[in-house]
Image (cartoon, rainbow, N blue to C red; front, side, top):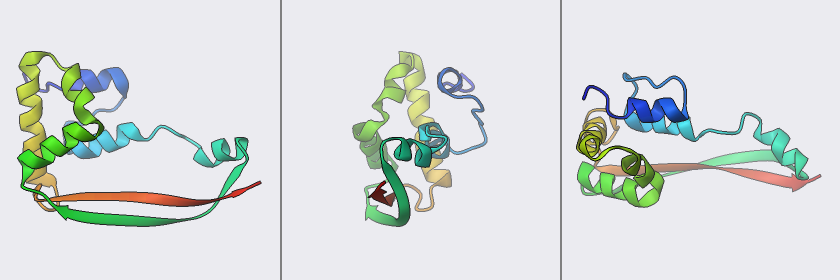
Length: 120
């Protein structure tokens, strides 16, 4: 199969790009609020600042990274595929980690943006 996950992405987002690393594509799919500030104000809050935090944790390579991804909210992608496509999907994720990840899948890099909110 040339692209086992393209059909899945076509069902949940437009613009799947085979040339973009897998993890970057997933990041684009998770962004769902067009106007978070407007939604926060609707419920009586206003963002007044933010800070970004990032950590890097050692991990035992791409296979361990794959296992971590499966335990932290990504199992649905694997489960949504037909049984024959699952091995190809896993192979593509591992190849992407090896070829495109800044630490070649040897460090778990996680970041978060923390918003400071005030009541209106």
